[in-house]
Image 1 (cartoon, one colour):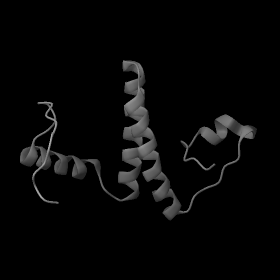
Image 2: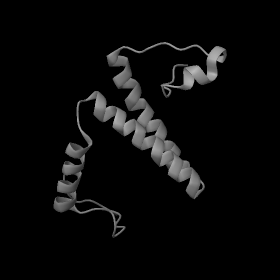
Image 3: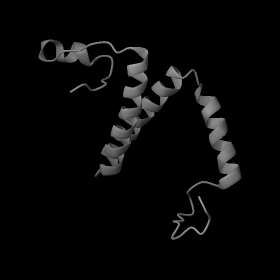
Length: 103
């Protein structure tokens, strides 16, 4: 089982595991798998402390993806703000019950 891990994990685990360095393409794919893994951990967090930790892990993966794609955080945040201006955010807690619009 191959699992993308943080940079210091090989030193921490030393002789208890094997590691290899991914190609750029495999790294990109692994980051996309990792973001889903971290999002699922956010979804299942049971305590506030665990939620904060998992959100931090999720942000770390987001930042790695941004760096890999040569996107700076400000660029992403600018687009996020534009989407808020166009469609709003999630503060009013709406949920869609049905959608009559054709796909």
